[in-house]
Structure formats: C-alpha cells, structure tokens
Amino acid sequence: MPTGLFGGSFNPPHVGHLAVAEACAEAAGLDRVLWMPAATPPHKQGDPALAPAEARLRMVEAAIAGNDRFVVSDLEIARGDVSYTVDTLRRLHDDGLGGLALILGGDSLAGFPGWREPEAIVGLARLVVYRRPGDRVDLGALPEWIGGRCTVVDGPALDVSSTELRGRIAAGRTVRYLVPDEVRGVIEAEGWYRPGGGSAGIGGAG
Image (cartoon, rainbow, N blue to C red; front, top):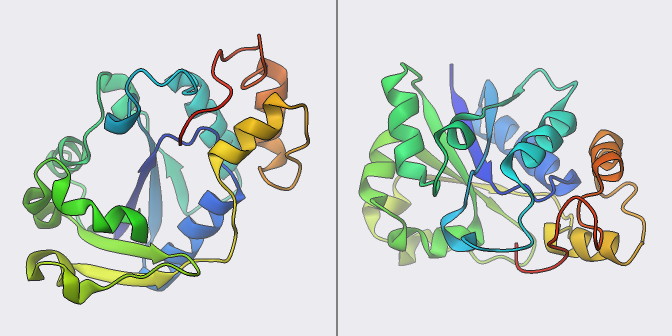
C-alpha cells in the first residue's frame, strides 16, 4: 500500500494542507496519506506560538475527518522530544510499512541536504515534492541521490499559512473557509491562539 508521510507542526492545520495532501496522493498514486503532527519540530524548539502537541493532534483529527485516504498518527507525539523525519521513517519501516513516500514542499527541498541523515531518508522513502505557484524546483541543482528520488507535483494555488491564521485569530478576525469548520470548532472551544486563551503564543514563525 503506497503511503505518503505528511509531517509538520499543523499549527493549525488549514485548507492548504488538505489540498496539498490530496493533490500529492492523486499525482503520486498514494493509497493513503499518514498525517504526522510533530511533537517538537527541530526548527521550532522553544517557540511560544506552538500549541501543545495534543491540541494540534485533535485539530488534525478534526481536519481529516471524512476522507478515507487520510489517517493521523500520534507516533511522534507519543515519542516526545524533538521530531526528526529519519527516526519516524525508521520506526514506520520497522513496523512493516513499505512503499513510503515523504511529502514536502519545494521550499523544504532546497534545505533537504541539511536535514538529519538525508541519505538515510531517501533510502527509506521517495520524495513527493509539491510546487506552489511561483516556486522554483530545480532537481538538476540537487545531487543525483536526491533528485533521482523526487516526484514533483504542482500544488494548488492556495496562499494560506498557519502564521497568518494565528495572527487573524489573535486579532479577533474570522478564519472561516480558511480552516475546516471542525478545526475552527476546536480552536474556538479550547481558546487556541487568542491572547490569554488556551495557547500563550499568538504569532511567531510557522
């Protein structure tokens, strides 16, 4: 069963995430997409804008409800500590999950050689790279051991970011139609991203 690993902070998950995951699954022939909220992303250690992992897991569960091809995993959250992709792929491989593909953005691909054990990553999974409108993805500029393992997918033209959404929520502005209604319900019920609400963080990068 070809499976795509779609990891990230999902702080919060939004319609752009959903559209990208669906487009990559369709273009790369993936039977399912495994959404993997990070416990602590390496580049966001100590970020006050990061909602607790359990809250982000609930938001992802709400976001993907109703799509039989999407599945959420709490593997990285249960493991705790900083989440590294290579560790997650090894665990999935040890658990017998084959045909793995790692879904990542064109902007992330440029920095991929600097990830922890990138050669091990491409040995465990092929790369499905989504290219947003305006992105330049030059596989020829990458080492063959990376470029030869890539499938490039043109992502949907949805300019939505989690950073923008947190800012809108903090300012009391609507995020209707930018996040699924189910995610908006979790955010509103639990008070995430509002000053003095469930999360102390209302801005920051992400």
